[in-house]
Image (cartoon, rainbow, N blue to C red; front, side):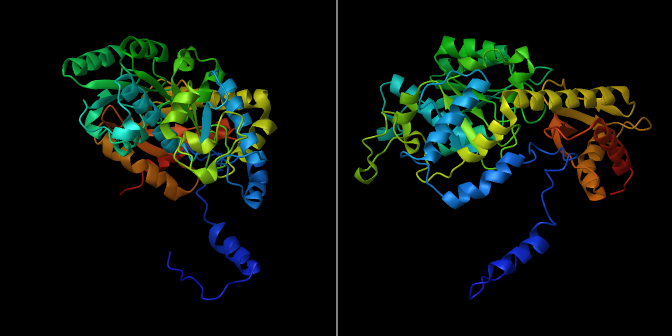
Length: 429
């Protein structure tokens, strides 16, 4: 942090020495099989292998007839097919991550709603029209609120829909909120459901929410950044995901593609293109095959070669390997949940349907100050140095959560995690 920019250039050998001594010894740690924090996977070997090639080619994947663009079309089709989402040419975009993918999706939703009202929101903005309302689960990701703020909708127009005992969106509550806003003269325009929340991995009742969206003319958006691939584990809760107008999923999460690589898929390419397309004369391409450039479907003009890492990762695993990866990590999460249920000093806080386990430590000899205890456990575990997990809040209570994405994790690692939590709890603040 305190380095000064050198006045004269340094030899590459010196830079490599610095990296070896000052960078490599201090990783984030997400490649380790006992890294259970947030949603940060270990990088795929294939993705790491080809990353220098993408950097050496250094293309802009805005558009044109070159490998970076053609490969992106391929991996978008692969990703859509993998999760059973309908795909048409031009029906997707690789992004920096789910945050940018969500901005793209909600911008298209805003454009769609305004167009149905006879307004060109690109030309006239949102001035002088009823506020547009977005509906988000209480367990929805913060990127949805950020997108609403960036798009000029305002967080005041983001309705937080309550969840049920399984931390899934309450569909009856959604119906009530939409009806109330219609009576108030507001403009409901989009409902954003989750296919795998960050807190618990919960999958909202997607098919029922799609019915509500259809009944009220709402854009149906699904945030599957982490959990969309969970559909490969045979979970019937994903029924309805294919009905979404837009779907976000992050190859750099469960698939392990080295960051950054997010993805947004949409049902109607023409609508998204009309939301973003702006082609000055110096970027005109009369040989784009009618689909246009990727830069016409999102805010980025210069776009990195994200597709190579994704293509290499998916090709190396194959469809069967991707399914094994998902099945393995889901099975590990279920095993951890069973270990927690069997332990008298732990408490499972949510059903386990994907690869996230939400729980807390509850010593048998005490029942007070549990929030304080569980709030300090993650840092204490990290300081011990053998495992890493993060905390959160569920239903107002402090909780621990373990996200399992690394197929190298073993049941012994899970047992060690619980022992580390027990030991960390004994450390006095």
